[in-house]
Image (cartoon, rainbow, N blue to C red; front, side, top):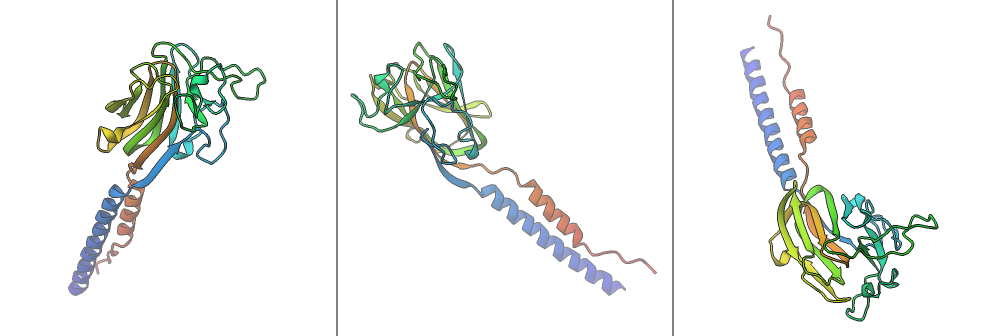
Length: 250
């Protein structure tokens, strides 16, 4: 009987060591696991590959990638919409690409609109026009999960100083980069990688100091994984199931 109990104890110890080793390996693996993804928002297609139209309201078009877009406009409607830079509307030749002061070909760009009139009720703004004025507002890109990496943003027709992006993690600022002035119809890009090593963030706020537009936005990041508590619980349950059953004493 004693030998049987000793054998059971040894087997239990071996099983426990094996399970705890598996838990440690799995935990380290999941903590280090990241999903590499260079996400490019060109505002011509959404995250499903569907075409985006001029004058379209942009909010959850990239939700499938874990990105939601919101806007604040102190002079007008709180929306971000697309503007067809290949066929400028709203008497805005300064947003044309290629244009008289740029050689890029952007098609749709993102703007804060002056108005959102939709007379034909097709769901799109009839005559998109970018909001002018002193510091009209911002466009915010919010992630479902924190990211580690860099952000690149193109800007069009930025004629006032102060435009740029700020990155946040849990509403605490972790970095900011300004674009400076580009001139009438000018185009330029900024990247956090020019000033910082990889940043951890879950929100990017693009502040607009005047009229102008956002071109392509690239998030060259990896996703911070969520804790794998369910997997660890499953292993814990497995460990309990492998525990030797007690024999009744005689």
